[in-house]
Length: 439
Image (cartoon, rainbow, N blue to C red; front, side):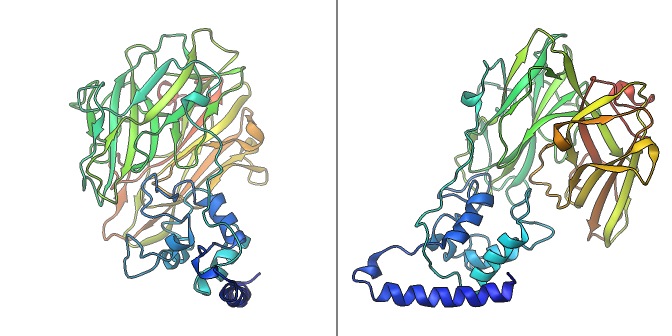
């Protein structure tokens, strides 16, 4: 259905519903309702964050008819439904951020919004139907937790100052010494979301080094100081993310004794809450008995980044020819760019041939604020000796300066952290010590 036709349809339906309600005794006291097809779209893509009490930094609810017709928190001169109509078509800051709406879903919302978001037969309140998430839903005993904490005090919640960072946005790193033994493997991971009003996403990194001046137990602004170059992606969570439970044949490689775990949390305190005391993070299960296949992390992409001023759709391409002599199984991807990222994809060129390409991951709308991991096609993709991995990162740079590679948020990165086994196999000869697969 086109947007124009959808708009005319909603105008007729809205008028008919209004006449019907006006003729019903007591109808004026009944709550206005959100039309069922609109409610279905909101429930599928939005309500997990935009519930009655918004979470993950969302500034407003989308749970009721009245919520859609309220003044928007971020733009009080516009109603919420008008702002929704803008954000679902915003290429730079799309909503939903990770899973785009289908053309049919967009047509439903566009038509309803164009008609003034009228009431219609449907629910008075849109409810979330998410799969249960959290440590209590893991099928194993939790062995380790890594949580946000006060600087230098692991037992005290972290106090997020209102207005900290840029417009309430701040990315902080909580530093732990690795508690794992040499033979230990991770088997399952679950998010712990404490103050859900402000936690937008988190990522767990393993690292053999720390930034200058940073020690175990510290909390530092990794959006400013940056991440250590040895940091490798382990797992992450973004709104809508689920528990991760590995099959019994797989175990994840974790940092050994003498190394570090970095919990990177992105806070989004757009409402300037002053009472945030947060202990969000990750709970995990592990085993001391190694499983048949140990998953490691390999880093693809490019360090050669120079995005010209005022550039649109600027591409950075990194290739990798793994130094493997036997098949390697890829089970997932963890793409990573910064705020100027537009899209990222990693392709497999079988035997290096352009006429034999398979897509490993294709993030068509990158959102720095909602970074997550993606399973390999079909759950596993087998790489053979001679295969080439090509990662393409696309950027828009509206600044007047060239943007180069760096760890600060103002800089850029082009990485895809692959989960694959055997652990450590997927790298070039010169990058093997750091898990780098960058030619």
